[in-house]
Amino acid sequence: MSTTSDDHAAAGDLLAVLRDILGPAEEPIQLHEPEFAGNEWAYVKDCIDTGWVSSVGKYVDEFERRIAELTGARHAVAVANGTAALHVAMILVGVRPGDEVIVPSLSFVATANAVAHSGAIPHFVDSNERTLGLDPDALDAHLQQVAEKTAGGVRNKVTGRRIAAVAPMHTFGFPVDLARLLEVAGHWDLPVVEDAAESLGSTYQGRHTGTFGTVGTLSFNGNKVVTTGGGGAILTNDPEIGRRAKSITTTAKRPHRWEFFHEEVAFNFRLPNINAALGCAQLERLPGMLARKRKLAAAYRQRLEGVSTLQMVDEQPGSAGNFWLVAVRVLNADMAVRDKVLGLVNDAGYHCRPVWTLLHRLPMYASAPRAPLPCAELLEARLVNVPSSPALTSRLK
Ligand SMILES: *Cc1c(COP(=O)(O)O)cnc(C)c1O
Image 1: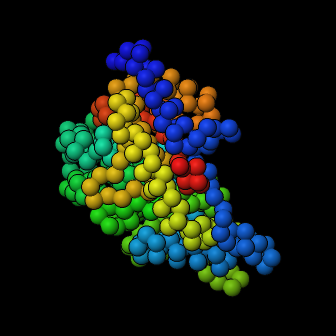
Image 2: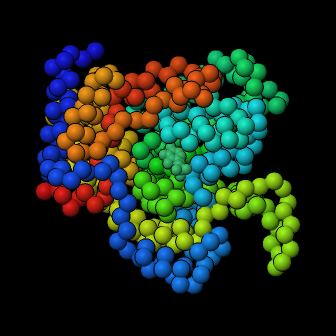
C-alpha cells in the first residue's frame, strides 16, 4: 500500500517526465495519432477516380500480398476489422458453440467478444508480470488442475465443456513467451489463435508475431500502428485454412462470371478497396514509423531511469516490440493511486490511459470460468500508457 506522499510523488514524477520529453502541452497531446504523409492520398484518389471503391479491386490483393510479405505468413486475408478477423479465426481452428477458449483477462474486449461471437465461452487465465501477456506457466498449472484429456479433446472437469483453443494477445506490442506457450498448448493439443492486433512489426526470435499459432490476427483500426480507417487481417501458414478464411469472409461465393452460388452460411467481412489503398500506403511507411516509435521509447527509457516511483515496461530477451503504446509501471500503486496519477497528467494535457478494465469484471463475462488472476489485477492497478505517436519524435530535444 502506498502512502499519500507516494501518490503525489508518482504523479509529479510522471508529469515531470512528460514535460521533459514532450515539452509543454499547449494543445492536448493525444495517446496515439495516425500519420498520413506518403502515398495515402494518391492511392485513395485512385480508387475514387477509377470507381473501384468497394469490395473488389487491386488494392485488396496488393494489401494482402504486402501483409504476407511483411509478416512472413504464407496467407493473409484482409477483413473489415480486427474483431471480425478474431471471430473467423475461432471458427477456422474448430471452436464450436458451447466450447471454452482460454484468453487473458488483461486484454481489449474484442479478444473475449470474438469467442462469444462464435458461440463459445471465454475462460480467463492470468498474465505475466514481464511480458504483460498470457502466462504459460499459469496456464499449465491451471489446466493441470481443471482439465483432462479425453478422446473428444480437452475437457473442463468443472464445467463439463470442451476447451477448444488458446488465444494469447501481444499487449501493447510486447510478444508473449511464445516458445513456452506453444509448448504448453502443444502438450494439451490445443490450437493457438494469436491476437496480434497490437503487434504489427513485433517479432519473437526474429519471426513476426501472429505467425506462430495456427491462425493469427491483425487490426488496422485508427489507433493502431498502421490504419486503414478500420480493418483487420487473418494470417496463417496453412493453405487449406487460408483458402477457407478467404471463402467464409466473402460470403462463400463460388467464383463465376454471373452465377450467385454460395457454399455455406458465411460472412461479408470484406475490407473495401478504398481502405486497402490506405493500408498499402501506410505499410510503405511502417519501417520509418517503427524507427521513430523506437526512438521515442528510448527517450522515455532514458528519462525514466532513476525515477524511483516509475518503471518502463520493456522488451524481453529475444523479442522486439513495436512500442505501439509505451507503458509505464507506477510502482506499488493501487487503483486510487493510479487514478490520481492519470488525473494529474491528463489535466495537464498529456493524454495517458490505464489498461482496460479486466474482462472478467465486465457484466457479460463476470460468470465466465477463470483461473486466479493475481498478476492481471496488479497490472491493472499499475500500468499507464503515455503518448506514443511516431510524430512526437519531432518534439524530442
Ligand atoms: C484493436 C484490437 C482488436 C481489434 O479491434 P478492431 O477495432 O475490431 O480492429 C483486437 N484485440 C486487441 C487486443 C486490440 O487491441
